[in-house]
Image (tube, rainbow, N blue to C red; front, side, top):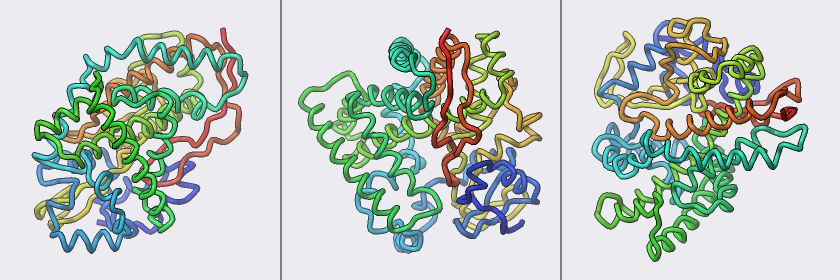
Length: 409
């Protein structure tokens, strides 16, 4: 049991390369207490796995604290006085447990099965081809802003029922809402998150009214029917729609950017993918392992527990560092090397158990098509800058921008 005095997740050094910090945590005995977040950090693969699969672990404070205690904790963490953020973001499918989580997940799960996602292949390929056609004459692009940002959000938007022309605005709302989940919860960031949640809600409210008049073959219409049947409340419908749209934008864009950066950092692996087309699915999994786009999540224990050889009282908060676990050399030989053909690769970037990522099949299909098309159409792809700047914070991992030069075949 140890306490961290050198873990600095808001620093530029951490944003540039968090992995030395993660390695230091893995080297310490037991779990590490991080006072800034009042959380016990788990960085080793086995410890993270034990926590997320433990039957006494939950994501919601509702199971371990009274309404008064929750209100006090929210005020202490500056989560209070955010009416729309509280209704639609602080509560969600992601942060629910038990019957509520199972009920909500059941309403949307069928549209994210491998069979349903594979039915989107041609639509995604058409979108990607059109995007590459529009960019092909440019000798230099920002891979994040010009390419990655224009695919996953549009695809998840179509599943929900959002018009293509609105997807750019949804990305802005999503990023401004999600930023408040990191350690820096200043009043300015709080106001930004609440304002954007309110705007997002009113947008979806108008879209819902349109679908109620004219239902379509989309997820919003499915959720409207679920609300009519009593399987979702008004707030649950909007919370779930926001969660799916936000997840479809942020994390997939981030892992596309970090995945491209990994291929540029390890050019022999990029050449390997050009020579062995069948490796792309394996390479995409390695991209999630190598730089997990959502490197931090939390759990609370509902009873006194012994975890990772240490006793902890009921209500303890645990921070599971997927980004650290996925570089654990005891689980992944040569863990700091990007290996496009890594097998086995039982990474934990999608979580485990009941909260296993709902959209993992869609994210991997997006990436498979984008990188396969890129390597097929462009014979030269190189980094256009000396240093790539990554986003700051503990809860996200992805480059702010990724300028590349390329040359078509």
